[in-house]
Amino acid sequence: MIDPAFLIDFFKEHQALVLILGMMIGGESVLIPAVYLVVTGFISPPFFIAVALGAGVVSDSVWYGVGRILPQERIRRFGFMRRNQTFVERLNGFFDQYALRILYISKFMYGSRVVTQVLCGARKVHYPRYLLVDLLGLVSWLLTLLAIGFSVEGSVEAIGGGVYALGVGFMVFLAVAIAVQFWLRSFIKRKLWK
Image (cartoon, rainbow, N blue to C red; front, side, top):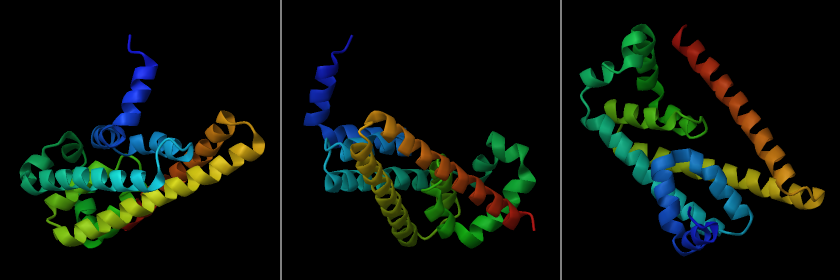
């Protein structure tokens, strides 16, 4: 069994490497624990933002590249695409019109990041514009997470409930994020089916 003290020491010595690999492999799901480490002082906010932006841009650009080089016919053969051809055709039209807006919003919709990057590449979205919107979305998302994390951290100290209050704060954040995601999905579906 691995000694927890060894893992903590390894993380302290190799914060950038661990955060970059975590984001490249785990994606946005790694950000919330990383924000906790920022709020508790284990990682500095500027360091977190720099590493998260770098890893996010590299990862998103790789998925964008996959979309650019993967033939459209192959993308259409994915199981979801075959089963929902009518919906996908309407989504493609919607995506052609609002690709950069969808890219920005995808940062706030858990689970939609990779698909959006691939679609941007497949639809040949102009890379400099893509990169600018991707960066703006990443910065917005990171600052939102940090703002929520630090606001929860203040309430943790005031209440004195530590872990419990932090958990409650993140649950509220999660509930708001899910509500926004459902609203965005219904908005997109209304636009696609009109």
